Image: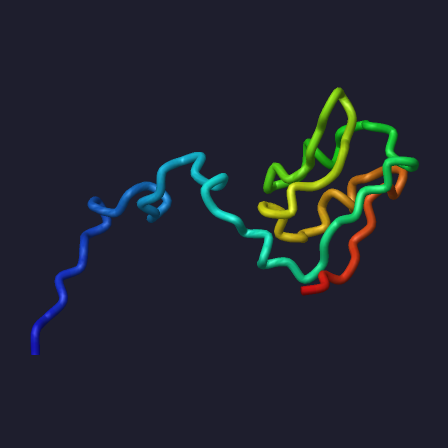
Length: 96
């Protein structure tokens, strides 16, 4: 039997990961969703709370207005809907 040699704690990178920072745009993680956010422009006051709190940077803004969601990145966590003061974002079951 060969014995596996493991790295010592000093050889493990901070955070324990060997990933480059800022690489999340390379991965389409939207397929992880069970629920997806639907934006209602009529209710939206463009306060940008959804944009500010979205952990995936999935809120699309154009000409200073929220215009929708980047569903390739959105994981469906619902934070955007939870922080929206006018309930302009509704979480709906994802249809595959």
